[in-house]
Amino acid sequence: KTFVAAGLIAAWRVAGRPVAALKPVASGYSDAQIAASDPGRLLAALGRPVTAAAAAAIAPWRFAAPLSPDMAARREGRRVDFAALLAFCRAAIADHPGDLVIEGIGGIMVPLDERHTVLDWMAALAVPVVLVTGSLLGSLSHSLSALAVLRQHGLAVAALVVSESAESTVPFDETVATLARFAGAVPVLGLPRLAAAATHPTFPRLAALLDQRPVPGGTDP
Image 1 (tube, rainbow, N blue to C red):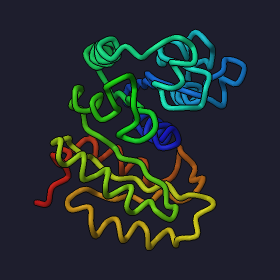
Image 2: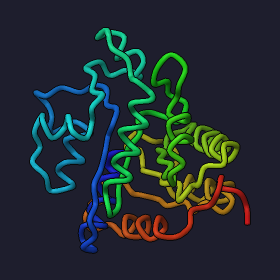
Image 3: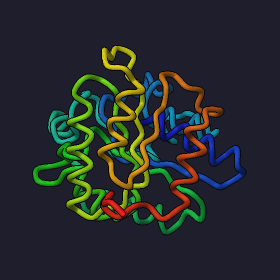
Image 4: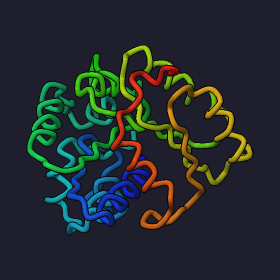
């Protein structure tokens, strides 16, 4: 997800558009390895200094354990305040005049606290969704299940991006083609492994799709 977000940021910056990014919730985070963290990679893509203070500004809920947010927060005697999370995102949406990337965490059903999931977060914000998946065996079911849930909740899906998994035993092109057959009106974009974020054509195409009206719920035309 972070690689796709960074590539999208790069495409918008090349086009001369003002862009900002948030990674509100991050687990497996350490100030000592900030450059390799998700917030650090987003800051680098934005051309901003990669510092602990800058990471805190775009990722207020940072946890050390590489676990789901509810588990990681519990280990630190903390929790993700869902109302505060929504307020943080809505303020950024209202204040930023250009393009804004809000990167989620884990899959759409990952718990954030005792009773809210990433899906609840997306539904409350009601912003266009880019669903990112890998190409490992099993990703067809995982991806189409996630897309079905997004449909059920009426979320606008701009694209399904298949980011090639290095260790996959499944042909990448066939995975992309199969998902495209079942995704209805949702565009499916294949992103080869380690494609250059600043130059690969997938990213400008994704940016163009976000400029269009995303498909509500990913339903067929």
